[in-house]
Image (spheres, rainbow, N blue to C red):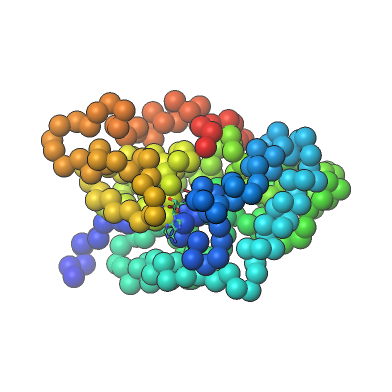
Length: 255
Ligand SMILES: NC(=O)c1ccc[n+]([C@@H]2O[C@H](COP(=O)([O-])OP(=O)(O)OC[C@H]3O[C@@H](n4cnc5c(N)ncnc54)[C@H](O)[C@@H]3O)[C@@H](O)[C@H]2O)c1
Ligand SMILES: [Zn+2]
């Protein structure tokens, strides 16, 4: 290969479906988490304010189930790690998952846009700390010593996803965008496919349902502009429309 040739970047958006075969339930499938748990009661900031013990217990249990010995990367996680290893260009996994299976499979460039299991954040001082300890309403922040202000460093419904600047940067320079195991119903991740579909990136997708955001317009091959409702938003206009700021975490599109 010519030394000056830089192969196009690849961005892979993954969702709960990629971890399903590793034994982790998705949200929205028939046997998904949503059929068993009312997420409004455990995955929102107001739920945390209302009943810290209930929310923290849910995440303590979640962490234990994600760390169970039988939860290991499956062929899809391994294939993505292999792709990153072998491909000369940049391969970035943008995952909505909080589980560590991409890293366990060997992927190095992983962006956890909805946070990750094994990290806690103090609502008072904002410090993020790696921790596998159970949290309780009496837990003390190791940084500012505030009591009862620690929560999992996981994005709840109504909160702004993390690392959005970095994600739009890799989307802007990618030549191929793939979506694996995501329903496309959670925004802004559901809009990445449209963002990438600006005529540069072919868009294969692997999911057992038909993601709402992956429609004919994302594979538009004509020279006509896509219908207005299907046009990708630029990262700048998305930020304006959503009132996006990197921190703190303002309200954005609900799932
Ligand atoms: N593993 C995890 O960390 C985990 C688990 C559950 C939910 N979540 C959260 O779920 C939210 C919802 O978004 P989402 O789109 O990721 O999940 P989702 O539940 O909305 O959709 C899951 C998708 O995976 C597909 N799917 C199911 N089994 C599959 C398989 N074996 N192979 C390939 N695809 C399969 C489904 O058809 C569906 O399209 C995200 O915010 C994410 O943080 C994460
Ligand atoms: Zn603190």
